[in-house]
Image (tube, rainbow, N blue to C red; front, side):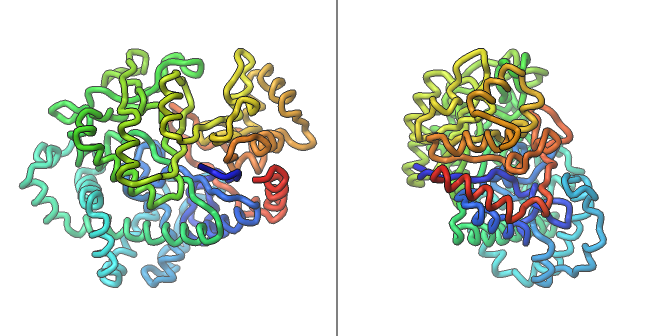
Length: 492
């Protein structure tokens, strides 16, 4: 599926920019140039959705809509939608290596509202066309966000009964009363996709493909759950009956309680998996390759009674398996997919992934557990897999060396012939790049040799995550040349 190649993992939010968070602006285009100069073929990012509580891109208000934080203000200024003085002096956060989400929310959103006032007539025809092309999800999403503003951002289950249950009269009333607010949210999506597709086109024309990431589940407080409540396991008050998570394992005694609603796969199957097909259709427009998070959940998933405080009392339930992917293939043809198959894998899960033909993932940081022989050791790979030094949920390589079990660290040093002169991080990258895996990917933090302070996320924790940003000065020609050399050496 993939020819021998490599890429860099870094989310849009982590790009440099003078305005507190990475955007689809000048620095994104310069990063594409950096990838080209480094001899890379792929840029992997995290989900592009609107982040809510905890700022996680894996808990979004919509499985379809894009995050307005990524809209670039300088592009809007060039288009005459805002003036430089409207935003030049605003406080978007004073740490160039960290995103301050509160300040972005307080100071960027009012500027985007100003752009809406100045641009809604200018782009009237284009917006109408955009609405027509995306009406399947855009109508419900923009209405949901408008009503959410009306109810002080409270979750939809706490809205008035009539609109919570989407009664016909209530929908009509809110559409009429909140017309301007609805149009504002449509306008933001129009800007988001306009800027994203321009950036993607620039990348693709230069031989860089985008790997996007989609979570298997949607957030409880999302337009998807509100507008399609029948496809989730909810009670008559629209509260979840069961929620998603992971069972207890070596990493967590009580498992992971994610809290997302569970799909009613029986109903989805009767509907030929229509909602999922539309989701994949949309994402295959957004990205060149789709990485599906928690892929094993399609074979069987861990469901936990709603209200439980840990994942301990969950149970395994069979998922839709190959039927879903046959339906997707029939409708959409061959889509390039990476199956995130990390975690507890049974023979059934492995057989299911092999049946789809999708490559799975190998994380080098997981390879050196001295207690057992690991599938993640490079000598166990077959070509149809993607090797990572680490993912957004891992520590950086240098952070791992500080915090991992000393026996595991020594094993890694022996196996990869690591030394301080080369740098442990570069030795790890060498191990991934030299392997037979068709695609090798490393986090930007690992190329920069950063420690745990640059970690993107610590699973099952809230606060302090998703904040890391690269410094503009770090993306040097010298680093690009060094990455190019190792990529060339190992034929990627």
